[in-house]
Image (cartoon, rainbow, N blue to C red; front, side, top):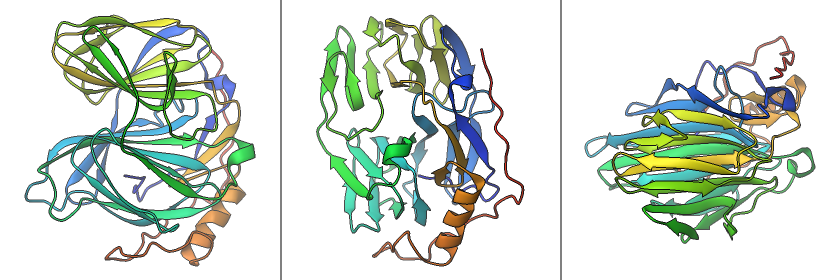
Length: 321
């Protein structure tokens, strides 16, 4: 899913003034956002207290939702620029269409990776018929300046490498973990990994001290560096860690997100990442005029209109800790 909030606001993110350069344990509470008639998401990034983790700039967690008698995910065509979207499922299926002509059904533990570059539009929907339950996460990765104008493209990887240990398995979604690399294309040093812990497992996951990290709980009862993290919440961990202690009180699922701190300051509005108010204003105009972002063919319904953009540019406000 993407940002369908009709009250979208401008956000300034990135820049090293927001990075915590030492290990911390900062528990982030989600903001609940209604998407359509049957889907509510828990938005962890951007958060009032934490805007980015490495290049990870947007994190929604949804489900598990019983959609047996519901339409499920129904996200009409909408635009993106300056970012990559990562679709990640634990249950259910998502049918992806985009303006490059890509068409794919994404299933649990498969990587749907869309690189918007200069401009793309796409839709996401539950297939008909569809599985009873829907549970997953939608994430964005900000593109650095030298790559944000590249041609849009879509990748679908049905098999991903794993890192295993006693009571632990980790599917490498993006980047690399413990020497194991995902086939997904990345443009900044980062990692995304889906971690499965069996009940009673205790493990220490190797980390890169130069990265900042956060862990999102998808399911179960787990302690991350001694902190209980409930499903739908996320623990920000800062930088300077070479390993991460994990313990599971039940079978549990976690998402590890990390990366080199994103040094550029970005402006986020609706489904766009730019570098200025003027840039996102131009993107809005182009989308509303039907230019630049292309057409999603095959979706039964009209595209989403963009929300109004605040007239006053947002000034950057850094934070040094």
